Image: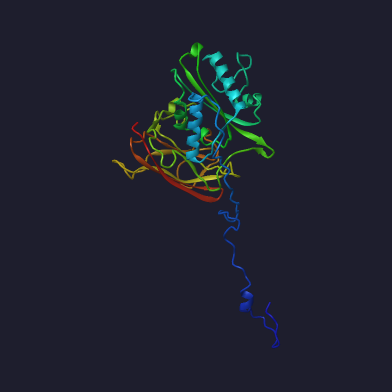
Length: 346
């Protein structure tokens, strides 16, 4: 209403009244970027230092521990600490595999009643060893006697096992062995990762809101040009026989470990050579529930929630810089990352 004065009243709106009408709010006041939901941003709880591991100096386990943590540090996914109970779990599983050989046994699961049985799956074995929390596992094997130094490179150049570099765990257990019996000459590496249980649930280390973690990471050199997808179990993109090195991004952040994702753009482009500036032909693999803002996506239930994998359908060129661009909507907010890496001689 208009203010009253000695001269009477009026029903005509005045400028004073109009000035009290607030402009509509279109931005978040809590630092969020997805108005009107306005999810408050979370801080990172990434681990940057861990105690020195007690694996024997120069041993395959010590080498693998250093390699994995070096890669995780470069990615930004945080360091893992050696955990004695997870070591007990993986050493017991190595013993089971060594005792039972290649007699139709699963690499990850055990059968009660067979020699060396410790637990039916990685989670059960970790619990049996006294670990309180969730646990997962990656295994690599090769049909030659070796020191196991190749295991990390097997996992980093993969579609599914790459999770060891991204999983938001805090703890690790490692076992590397040259097997005997009917597996004599085989080397096996077992790497278990764990998230300890807290009062609020399983504790996870994750980056801050809006983060995009990627592998190969920015500035990485000597990246392999190809990946034998038929050698990974399960087999990714099974209709192809040999692909380029996969590019993986993780969008899970602290407070949003299972984000709602819609992919807008994911490309890889050589910066030199005959095809410089021409995007590589690829497939984009996503977990169930991920949607698109344009590009064609292939739903693969083996891809971890919050992860997107870019698969070059042929080998990349040697000694070449590749530029990668990724854009998506994550929990209503736009995130983008542009970076490059360089391939090696093979």
